Length: 160
Image (cartoon, rainbow, N blue to C red; front, side, top):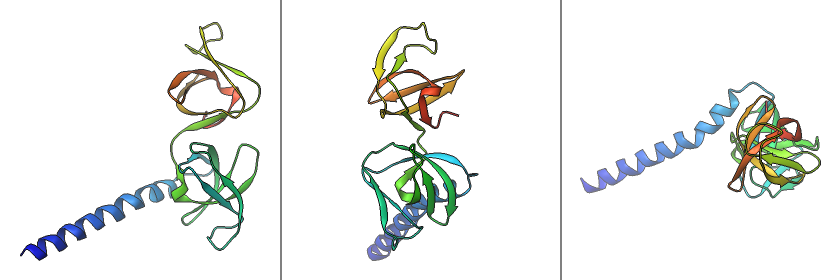
């Protein structure tokens, strides 16, 4: 009887793991392209085609970097980065976390979504933050625990 319970527990755990792992793939495959995603791993390879047999054309070493998904093919996503470079990435390397990157010029992060609000920080081009919300041309972003509002026009990513 003990052996049967152990087998049942292992089978149940395996079923839960399979269902949990498949959920992001299913959710992302139902989205209408283009849509925003972000890199979920500390290292992610962009490939020239939708298969591990294709060579990598870029290696990204930056978690939360925003990307635009422009095509879906099974478990592969054709993505575009902020510089316009396109290639293929496996869905496991991507997240639905809304992020953005500062496009150009030093940008002011403010306490409230107004230009005359108190200045909190200055963020440089290339800084990546998680988007909390965007409204009236301003986005509240979190950069390593520092939160504030940045003009949406200064960002590339999930600001729409």
